[in-house]
Length: 202
Ligand code: MN
Image (cartoon, rainbow, N blue to C red; front, top):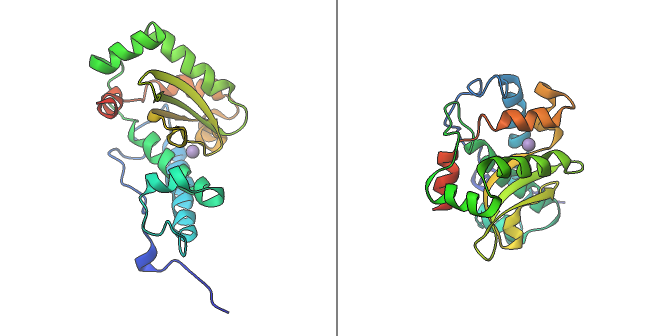
């Protein structure tokens, strides 16, 4: 009987460094919350991903292609890896608080105003049943849209381009906000860096 394990040269994905310290997003997101969310939950998805791709046709695939084409546990762990990196990289201790330029114009066009957009995305994030993600995306027709996805769901699999992700899994907010998901989402707006989202929209 042979056992397949992930060895040094099959460990393809590693925890990315963040451009801020784990205590830098406080008080909206505490250091302890980051230690668990980034340091443990994301690390576990990455470890599972590295283990699950061994011996599959995805061994040399990009993370994005695994998300687009895999299913089952491999999809779940690849998508959770992709989603979390995308989520953490849009947060900042010194965020640009309002989108301007092309993205600012597109948000006003699609949602009337930035204020209305925040209300709509918050509503989707707060009301999503169970675990999942709320997304700002560019849809196939090039229009901005807000979508909710359960569990590891990622709009890439529907041919949409993700621009911003809000994690509404309980592990994202339970340390700081307990059951108060709405308060967690409200605080998150103060940490989203629109410079990053503008860059993604180019
Ligand atoms: Mn999470």
